[in-house]
Each structure stands twice: as structure tokens, then as C-alpha cells.
Length: 237
Image: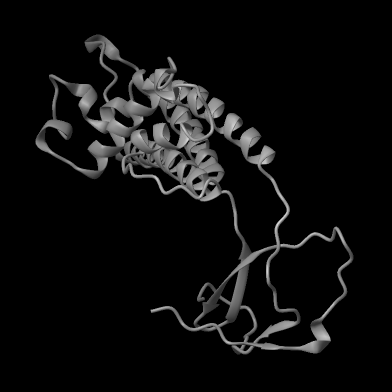
């Protein structure tokens, strides 16, 4: 259970704020050893989209290394370097997972802004339901929507291993690592990138148009009553 926040009023910390001053909303937490920390609430969907993009680039670098292998007389590029496979699997897992998370978090932001809880659960269904709140465009009819569906399928196969998605030479593209090392991966990511980019751009425009003035109740001059310590001299936190 989370430790209760302990704060007190400190008049010495009260500062005057003129009209139009920028106010930052911070989320608090308590570090067991070092006291209170607070952070500004980020746009989580943007975080996940950036992480997915970065890992797609990592995977592309792995792909270049794979294509540099000599196919030899068998005309097969055999990968015996498990470190290379680990890098591919790590980057690929992060890519597909963050893509799905980006969709889920954007959908959540929409339901918060519109104060309308979404009934759907899966990323694909929540994307369609959330989009219906701010656009008349059928996002699932977008020609690049299939990119999301393909990434979701690979994410599901990674998280729910079965015989047919761990070793399946006949339907090799159902095996995540095989799919990640194939030409299917960059094509699917490109389609998702285009589809999500359009959706996110449209949402940001609508979100800004809904900006409004509102009042919040605040306590000024707040200080933490949790003890603070100097930063650790080593890696221990």
C-alpha cells in the first residue's frame, strides 16, 4: 500500500502569482529513503509512440546485419549469433508492445477529455470507439489500419506462446521472431506509423480546440514532512 503523503503549510514558500502565470500540475510520490518526489503528468501515448519508433529503428539496424550475412551455397542466411537474436527480439518486442500501448493511452486520453468511459477493451476496439468521439472518419477503414492489426497479432503471440506461434515452419509468419526478421515487419510498422500519425494529429487538433478556462482549488506554500537524504554515492537507491 502506498505511503500516505505528509505535507504542511509553509508561509515562507508562498509566492505571488500574477494573472496569466503558468501553473504546473505535479503528481506526487514518496521514495522510501529519499522523501517526496513530484513529476509533471506526461502524454503517455506520445511516450509510447516515441519508444516504438526508436525500437523500430533498432530493429532496422539488426536487419541490416542479418542481410550482411553470407547466404553461401545453400542460399540461406543462417543466424547462429544468439546475441543478435536477443537484440532483435528485444527491439521487436518493445516495438510492438509500445505501438499497442500508444493506441491504448491515446484512447484513454480521449475518454478523460470527453468524460466518456469507453466500453471496449482491445486496442483495436478502443481506437475505433475513441475516434468516434472526435472524428467522423472511419479510422478502421483507413488503408493503413491493417498495420495496427498486424502488430497486435505479433504482440499477442509474444505474450501468449503456443506451439503454433513458437515453432511453425509452415506458417512461419505466426512466429514473432521470424516475423520480426522478415520483410513483413518494416511494412507493417510503416503502415501503423502512417495510420497512428494521422489519428494522433487529428486528436491533438481537436484537443487544443477544446481548451477552456477552469478553476482548481490549491493550497499554497506546501512543503514535505518526509525526511530527505542526499543522493546516493553509488547505484543504490
